[in-house]
Image 1 (tube, rainbow, N blue to C red):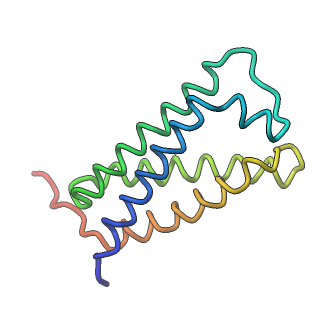
Image 2: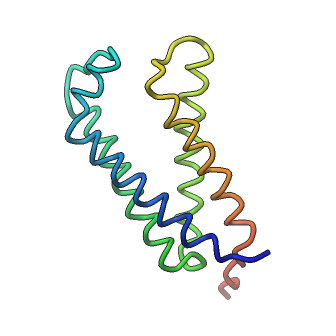
Length: 129
């Protein structure tokens, strides 16, 4: 299977997470207000998570530069996307999650599937002796 799609995938994923994280870092209050979501009792709860998303965005941009060398970052990305989409979708279908989080969960689920596909077509590094 050809691998030309892997670099653009991680450029898009990197920009997406970097921008999304920055937006939530600086503008979570009006976003929460627009969707009627209550603010946490301390801004750090949102800001730390936003910074983590920014960091992962940078990691995905590293993957775009050298996908095979950065397979481990892809694996962490799969776990990130699984954790977020799994948590949000689980709570959403139980009726305990505001709908504002649903689009991001669906997008992350799609990214997760694409990341797994990328891992499957990238050759594994040679075993260290």
